[in-house]
Amino acid sequence: MLDEVEEDKLKVFSEAFLALLNVSNNYLNTVLESQVDSLETTILLLEKIKRNKRRVHLIGMGRSRLAAKVIGEALKLKGISVSIIGDTLSKPVSKDDVIIAVSASGWTNTTCYVVEEGIRLGAKIIAFTATHGSKLDRLADITIYLPGKSRVNGSYILRRMQHRRKTPLAPMGTIPEINAFLIGASIALSINEDDPINAFKRIAELMIENAFRSYSSVLSKSKEDLISVINSLSKAIKDIRIKVYFSGAGISEIVGLMSAMRFQHLGINVLSLEDWKFREKDDILIVISSSGESAVPLLYSKEAKRTDLRLYHITSRESSSIAKLADNRIILQDIVPNRIEYLEYRVSEEGKVNFIPAFEFSALLTLESIVAQLADIQGILETDMRMRHANIE
Image 1 (cartoon, one colour):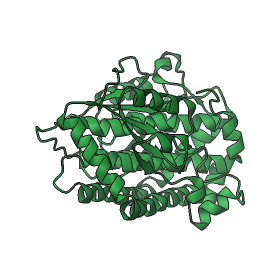
Image 2: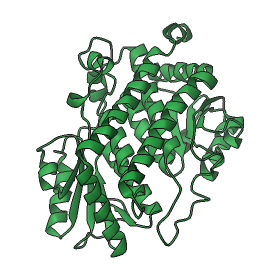
Image 3: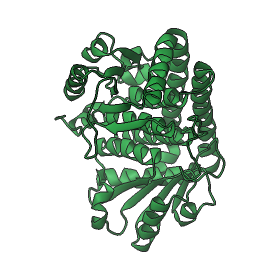
Image 4: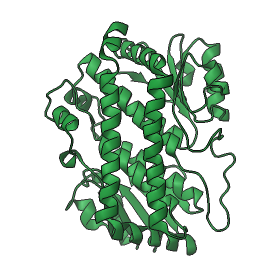
């Protein structure tokens, strides 16, 4: 298997990473050209929610739900009260609250049902969808249109969509979810800025620029480590006895969950940390932490090494505590040097915060590209992945 990956020179990983990033860059330009009115209206509405001490509720299914949670984390950092519909501690929807709904298709039954109930209760609806004219689009007060498969340009993507190679670039809707992360988080972090549209542009461009630098960092600092990780995960596709766990804090944890779903679609035996007690020697723990010092991921990392699991770390600090424990390290970039996730960030009374999830965005692209490389090696088609996708909302 090592020879297969080395011979390929991580070609599919590289193509997937750059293609996804170029789609995001082109999409950002499109948003700024054709959806700026929707951006302004969305930011003004969210500022009003903060000013009037109302609440934002999030809804989506599967990875769309996780993309919505990323937006929610950014909103919390701006001092806005957030509730996840359906969670144990979810709050009631009241008149003049906002519901942010994420659904690439715009037809997800549960999401549309929740939105309809929210409208009945007097909530305003912000939709993130790739489908013009869908039910969600028609229900929403404001729609941010995401790029979907049919709208993506570029020879590499088209080649994979047309099955000229073994596996598609973005199996199971990757492109809309990545861009819901990028645009949604940038909108949230632009609230209460002096020039919100310029702030939005600056934040999104920083995330994209950091991802380009992270791609170069992976190939210059972590190529052999990446090959080892791919080899190990490729073996896990064939051997269901190997269990894979993800750990992270804050948005890094959400990125881990988004990636865990993709790994499961590949046929890997992915378990949540709720099943940590079932770990065995030679299982795999993937830790996502820019600082490499976050308390809970560090605790899991130490326990993983104590019980002979293989520990893979995605980080921006190759000398961190977790990185020193790891069997392999994938080194990305971060716009905030040596940060410890969330610990040093405090929201001011004006809602100012200097956090931008640039590392987390790069980590998501890295893991998505690993999925593309693994699918190519094993000859896994999108149709195969769909068979492993949950079919009941």
